[in-house]
Image (cartoon, rainbow, N blue to C red):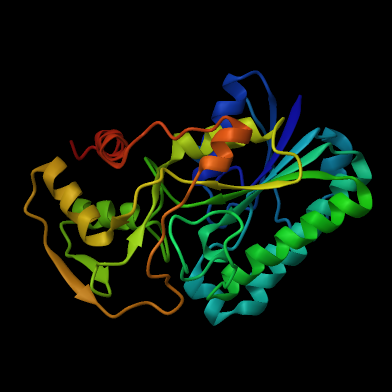
Length: 303
């Protein structure tokens, strides 16, 4: 019942680890803390401070994980444009190191954290898993390429996998750093009494999924969805302007905002169909944007 979570000190990974511990799993976290936080690691979890680009053989040998949830990644679109070689080193070479060790130690399955970035600008909405893939950034390219490696290891070595392509995940504790989730960036600006900066005209849309829903998808994927890819979203298309207005309405604040230049590599629209995840995994997102924002604002001390 051992699950190894790479990137388990990060925003989504730490939520997954807490859920799995609650469900009775033995959790091992591997994280180099470059973006994750030591405070995110539950005391009940076993922790190794290490990068996926380093030797992992001793960890896999000692812990013998039945499952690996692979979340460790370089996740910044802008940084991937600035240094695509570093993006590939972490997201591809680091990921391959995880797969190699998983095969060697007899791991049953890898659950992989992929992204809406693999699709690029959509031809039609809602996005289904079979939609054409046209990633706009090296980050999106690395995410989609690694999905192919998973299929290869499945066919050649029998290493089972499930890919979860996340929409825009948000919730309490998300860091607002470079390319951080827009909800976290907005809330950080509110705390600092700063002007909220909206890139582009604000009409670009996203599908926002609450972090507890994203964590539940991982739990379900441990034993379902063999060799499959799933979109994980709420299924509602929300513009950045609408997001800003909703936060203002909930907080009853007169928020300051300004429009900035568009960011290279950003997609224009996003809306996920999670029908397949519902049918195969039994996944249903529970929290609407209003519900999730309310929970987030309360825990962040803004309500």
